[in-house]
Image 1 (cartoon, rainbow, N blue to C red):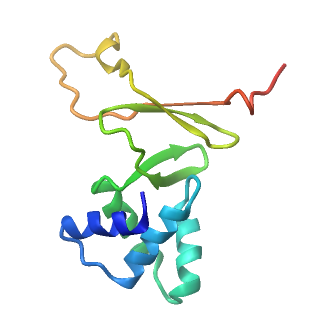
Image 2: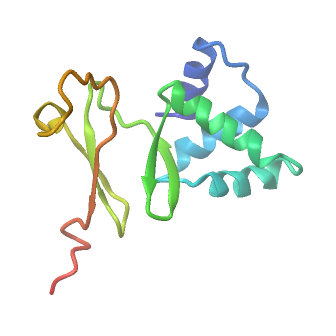
Length: 139
């Protein structure tokens, strides 16, 4: 996804397009992988000194809610990346070393044993963390 496409998505959802938000779109469009809120803050603060961390985080949350960014919880904290191009419900397999991410189109949610009777799941997250074939630790 290009920065212009991200900006168009934000505009279509009623988000005011500021220079800061355009810069944020460019940052994610140019990122190869995941960015932590601190990564984003450090990068944005070079161009916009005095920008608050709360403002950065609020914009990351808005972009996540709009479906532009995906949020993942790693052991070392929350990270964001551009939403992958899969247009249907799916999950991810993520390498802990190189952070390469693969979509998994199968959803195991319907087959989870032990769910309380009558419980209706309406939202869930499911990621598998490990090592890809290039990073696999033999032994």
